[in-house]
Image 1 (cartoon, rainbow, N blue to C red):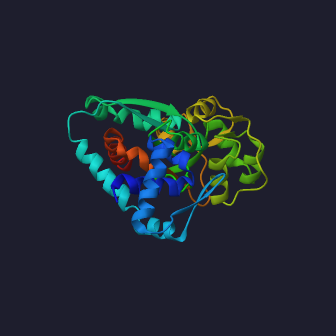
Image 2: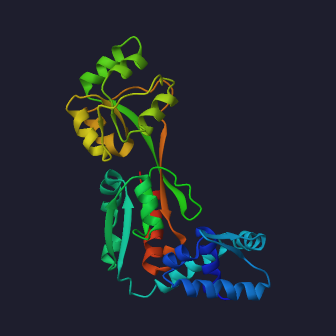
Length: 296
């Protein structure tokens, strides 16, 4: 019973498909079938029931998966770290995330990785872009402002930022002077990250100001574009601390006081367990985790 056979089993268990597991592992489908057959022969019981659309794990497979837990991934990550101690970290690591977060906080701290000889490719995308790219092996690591609930991926909380409602001084003064803040916010143009307006809605809900759904005057997935419009005196929005700290200090933007509290915006490092078999990806994940956890 080899490590490679166990890795194949875990991937088939996650994917519920021999062909999908083969694609993730970089193996042929016959090789994956042979690994599973070898494990079934060693255990003496079938692990999967074959169907036209894939496979379903047996009770034995579920028991084996539960016994393994994260130990296989831990072992593979440790092996990758040992291999990565050699000076050869050549190759490219593909990192995906929200454009503003990557540009403002991640890129300035990538210098040590670049100086080590690693090449980095940055790609921007939202939650679904990230999930799709990780599962299809189009990126190696990702930073997401939203947790990704998918049994085929792993994620960990690495950074938190307070979320502020902000506007230009004249707009903020008008909103704060209104007898009913909720009504004033409802009738002022709002700038949002996406159609679902999670950031705006989270701030309104936390502060008990939520009423009906708001119609965004502009939707933009790079929050720096919203910040520029706000500074020009148009509308209001919610921004994480790192994107408005300097503007609030200079007076370019003014915070709309939160009646209850400023909610917390969380950031997650996300990866596919299979990607950690590459030493450079394991090293990059460790470095990214360290730099994101120490952000001020």
